[in-house]
Image (tube, rainbow, N blue to C red; front, side, top):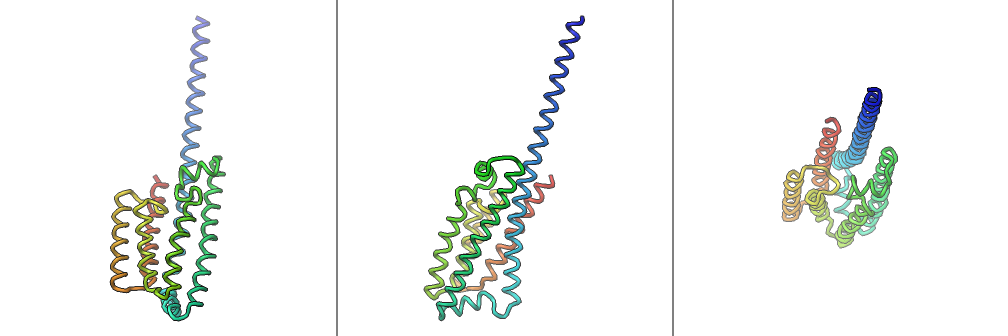
Length: 222
């Protein structure tokens, strides 16, 4: 009887320990997911705020970016100065995004490279940097060639490309495809209509990033 009681007590202790470990593991996973979602919200929320700020500047400023871009068609130095500003701003914004993700990886105690590959694939191996660089080059050619009216349609096309390829924004697959196709159609219309208003891609990006941020907030609240 005593041996049976001891064996039963040992089994009970083992079960209790396993239950505690499983609970801790579950709590750790939930915490890790929350931190990752918070990083997504922070990055995409910042993108939304920046795009919204630029859109407001475009609306209320008398010397907005569209007018400056059109002047650059006759003054290449103005166009070059604008390109230099963008070329400086993009790496700074990318470094800020990588810093947020690096801090998140530290909080979940995971190696940075594996954490990025698992949760932020568009940042893996500096892929976003190389992608932005390849997109920046055609924009530069348009400005320097004196046809800045095609910059806005190309920016709208880039937004559609990111949506269709599931990068940067976090929408369900069907929603990404629908929004991406709509952006491509919008870019084609802008191009045919010779509509060079930079406000259009800025407003589109603001709403797309706002919706993506809202999706992340909703997931985090579940």
